Length: 403
Image (cartoon, rainbow, N blue to C red):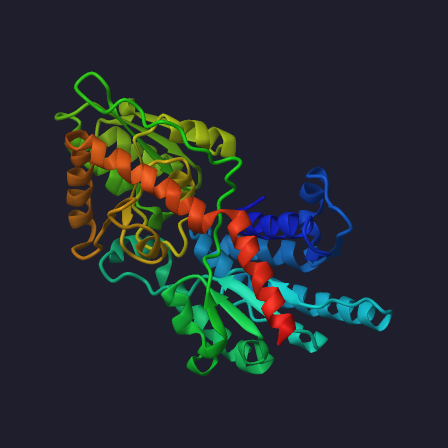
């Protein structure tokens, strides 16, 4: 499943074993869900079919924007609105037949553009956690141009949909993951907003391991990068930093991920004469990512426009320090206790300089970075594990019902 589908799956699979749960989802998820053993306990699953529209529409979007996944996600909103309409129609039919639910919780899509009419079912509606509304950074214009950043303004059309649908007006509670998300919710509805990050960590998979032997003249500094190959993920900046460090310290980089930029980024590594230092692994399953985290000294995600940052939480769960950019979601997750978040001011050149300095610091002060990994693990246990999130949700459900 893709990242957002995984979020929905975590909510369903964990709620279903604790409370009676009905899952409403796309029929495109059916095979994966059945293979995973669902439905669980006495839960029910309703599949909504929009494929007759979605396949053709998505193919068109891909032709128009072959190089921007974010642009495709933004323009795919009509499929959600169709899904919402069909789902409500089916749920109303079930209500008339005697089916009843106490609360409706719309956990995905996580975008604040995902305005719904679920309040038409006359039940308390909880929305989110939403994560979105992040403005384009002004200090990386060349990266945002490559990512069709100009198209992000399309999301503001969603506010018209909100007015038409009355989504935030009629929601009982809106869960917002970041400050940027809260800002795009109409101010008059802030009184029923609460903070809850949209990402969580499966602590059964992302387990801790002792930090590797400190980097030295004989033991390379092992860096891990995990992300889809999208312009804003910032891998070229990390490659440039490694090229500068290569003459000074032994260093290795493992890259997990794939995408249309594969050839371009491989070429950059070759031109910098560092390809021999890089292990390009392609896309990998979570268990394999954990293996690589366990042998790495640091997880580096120099993303210039990251709304969430799930991989940062996963690295922290494995007791690994994290190195990122202080913008968007990472700015609210990462501080000096768990790693380092590089200020975005100064743009690409300043970030590369900061990456060089931070990576050198791991070699100079290994115990400090080891401690950051340990603190990250403790924070993940306290705040970001999926069971903790489900506990918070169940407490919220009870509060809503008591009102």
